[in-house]
Amino acid sequence: MDISIVIPLFNEVESVPELTDWIRNVLQKQQLTYEIILIDDGSNDGSWQKIEELKATHSAIKGIKFRRNYGKSAALNVGFAAANGNVVITMDADLQDSPDEIPELYRRIIEEKLDLISGWKKKRFDPLSKTIPTKFFNAATRSMSGIGNLHDFNCGLKAYRIDVVKNIEVYGEMHRYIPVLAKWAGFTKIEEQVVEHRARKYGVTKFGFSRFINGFLDLLSIFFVGKFGKRPMHFFGTMGVLSFFTGTILATWIIGEKLYHIAAGTHYNREITSQPLFYIALVAVILGSQLFLTGFVAELVSRNSATRNNYQVEKEV
Image 1 (cartoon, rainbow, N blue to C red):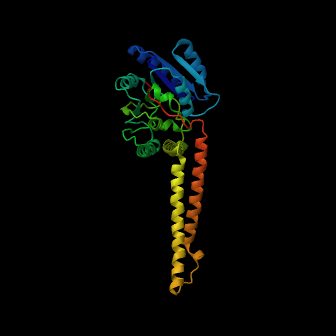
Image 2: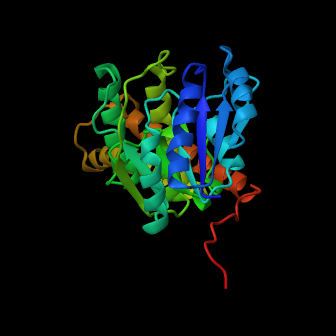
Image 3: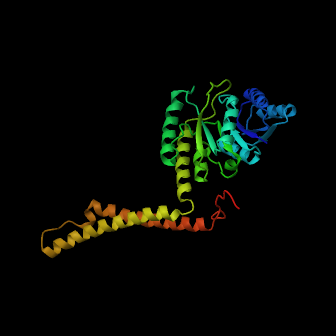
């Protein structure tokens, strides 16, 4: 099979028939074999009934229904597991992504042998309350991930080589950072393509302001797990040792200063415990010890993990 199209949806009963017909028309003209995997993320507006109706007349459609709303990341993860095409395309169900982009995305993945292509909605129809925070998070993600050639990590329209989606796990709010997950998994051939952003035709957006907070926390989580997931002691231990020795040096300085004045017979009647620097040193020593112990416990957990020796093997001969 050439293409699997994975589409998460939540209360998109109006747009699903139009979207699937549009996809079918585009791919039939290209003579590509395909499947459309629709993941109903706990809709309550009749979206699942519409999917069942469409399946009756369109054999390429596959439907998966969640019992409740789990979020876009969960829907994508389940869709990736069900995909069988050589190239996997993800897109939103709200008709803001154009299926006309699919043939070019497919061509580039196959001919340029890319791992992932992320869409870039260069001209957007979103309000400023959405575009400004999005620019901030894209800049932060570029800086922390080292993927400097992507402008829009959160674009729903992406194309993947099948190996990519079978070797990453998407959870929480991490659908925004799939290129980062792919890079940490060893898939580094990541490019960008300018795509059309269409104004929403039906319904309203399903994401609130909290997605920005959750997204930033997930970015920190991805960065830490990707870099130190298999060696947590390197992070916590380093921070703990630095903090412990900083506190020890400060405390030694304070005590040494008082002993010097006593030995020299000079006037020095200030108690060590009355100095703010003493408490800074004390906190640094305690914090350093706690960080070191945290790293030690995390290392024990990591060494007992069932996935501690799971590594991405690209080829064998």
